[in-house]
Length: 397
Image 1 (cartoon, rainbow, N blue to C red):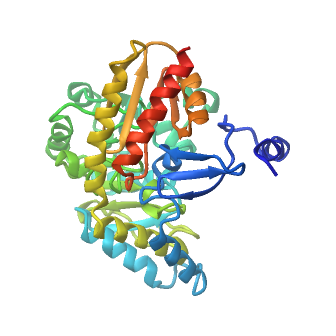
Image 2: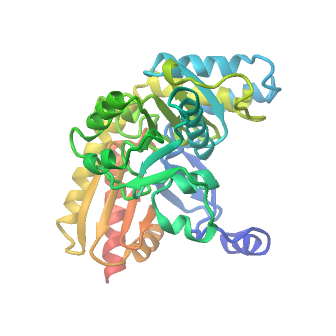
């Protein structure tokens, strides 16, 4: 079947929840993917920052194949070696002390919120409110919709769960002014990815950390997208030198398989047995894949490559910006970048780039986002910049 025929299958059977690009991806290798018609693309979406060690990474594929022949899943009332190996490598390479595994970034944030509320209930006289930032994105369950600081995600799903307030990102005074005796925690993305690749000013996250310490509040970092090398360090907090009390991970953790985690320092671990759980969370198959991916990332210093390649991406984007007046701004860090236009040309640019063999994320009507695998090479970036420039020129013609 060709791409058009597969799209007809989707229209007949699949809920219409995603405005897909007209590309039916069949296979991938490294930074490249191919559709069912044989066309090759440079994938600068990485499954929304998931395929951090590249498509079809051999270490991850081998771990999945071996584990699938051994044990897929068992009740969490028993120990499993892959779960414990993954827990060890994450804790030993982070500032956190403990970890719990779940199945997605939304679940990881849900667990982080629940842990903070348990902490507030038992250690802060029943405090339960959590302050998040405007333009944040924390997931699509009802609790995370409430946590997300974007009203359009909430408007049609009222009533949303209470207990959240939202303040402007990168505004320490607004955050301080929102705290009450009901506040248990502050929850932030180190860099707002879905919200527009918004990078905090120097010192902001440290000021938040200091304020939390002074007021015995928990600091939660949603690192679902910034964690596992995306910003050029293994965890995003390391790029800013600020340690959270609780951290949510997912996306790049599994090397392509669905897994989430929330980690915490010992002082924040307020849960007791029975407070939280997951049937599939921490199953042997996904933990084996995530351990292989994380070990590959550490052994091959993939975050450092992300930092170096990020500089090359910035150079390429800046050079393209200089050629087109319609481009207002380029911003990002590591392998997370946004290009912003003065008008709503993003759909046309993404379509033209599809044709040119470059996959992008249409972040906003006036913006595109670039998130290549962290194993991307300099030559692949140069090719991507050529295709991006061609796509923009075609879209504007």
